[in-house]
Image (cartoon, rainbow, N blue to C red; front, side, top):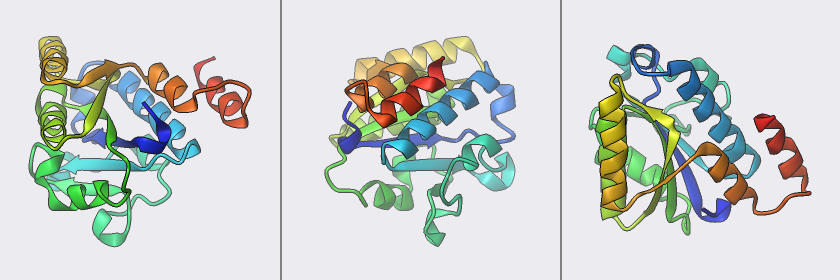
Length: 186
């Protein structure tokens, strides 16, 4: 993974959905970790919300880390959608393509076997290099999480952890960015 070629996508970590999932606090924390790394290393981030009228907004700790939590239509980072795959939403595709040369997509969120899976498969079909952050995705049931990750791997996605993302984006120690971000894992 290369920070200069990456975009972070956090899928549907919403108020009414994440409490029903496995390890909801850990998942939100992992997504926040990734977003802090992205912010510090100038990696663009896109946050999606599946039918926010019914499932609520994105978890507050995640929204608090955005420079602008407004919807994409208002110039922000949040894409509302009804399609399970983020790629099924034109505003998501437009936002993703705003940064030419960013052919790698790092994906986190929920649910692993539905919106994350369908998004990853569609991104792979569009020729993107996709990295699924295994410790930052969840589902309501463990089997759905496990087999969702397995299916994404079989489709060609690379399965990574949040620390792998951070260290690959950083590339070297001894920088101010390294000092700041490595503090997140202590």
